[in-house]
Image (tube, rainbow, N blue to C red; front, side, top):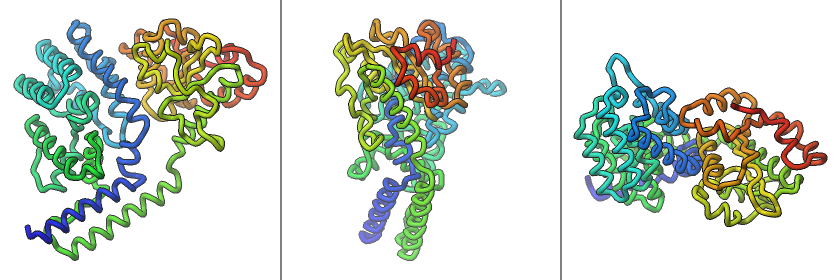
Length: 429
């Protein structure tokens, strides 16, 4: 390649990355910058540790359906912007008898210990060694899709992996990485690390960024820049790229942000109701600065959690609970609310468990999943999972949007304590 062609190729890649970052419909803005993505990390990590512990104690069983592994993988697959279909690799295929981690005890144990090693290890060398060790077991049907679990344990070391990411990488670089083998995944990982270093001013050391970029390329949202130095082809490509961006901006203007506004609005209802009932209110630390009612969502709320909460095990997750009500006298948590507009219910439940089990004496009366009316069945189905067997005794309740909206003004004016909220909430157990 001539120096001028190399310069054109570099400029084209830079142009594409800039357009991708600005595209309201691309994975950078819809997934990588999505607040719920960050909230999911801790709950998925906890779930992976639980899978490993159940396998080690021989209580995992022989089924994927209803298992703690299904719960974790479902939470990943719900991030549909990039992980749609991520659960397929873990589904039991009876005719092929794969993946062979359900019926083969030795393979199941090897898989569990691999997850435990990844959860406890730090640094590239240990993680790559764990991959090689698992690969040597030659467990039928258990391939690099497991890297999607590793990503949530080590986002700066192990990138996600799926067909679109591989296709995007090959299209951008001219490589011939193939699916299905760990050595191919490690080659892809090395290339993604190089791309991240090359474009470190536009990407992130969180490998989800480069994965999202390659996903959008591989899924056909963008066409990769021409690699042959043809100026006419390059001009046509830039026109097409600008057209994609313009179309995405129009679509975003018509409807983007409605989910976020609804989620924020419900948080605002709960904030105002809590203050009216005489409680101190905590808003999730990553939501406090969101615009609401002419100000910020965190206006009038606590700037810090009290020591008995802030210093307890699981405090990092508790800080991300959407809304907490605290007694103004002893600063103990009286009620916790997770607003689940369209995101994974699993993560909200895990954060509530961190509060209830990690901060003794708190939230004994009020743990609430606040969700649209049409999600009640989904909420109930989630709580029936074996992974949440501890939830039954905590009496987590479901608070429908409609009931909260209908009664919040009356509760604020005439209510006292938690009685009014408990009256409109529904038991889930």
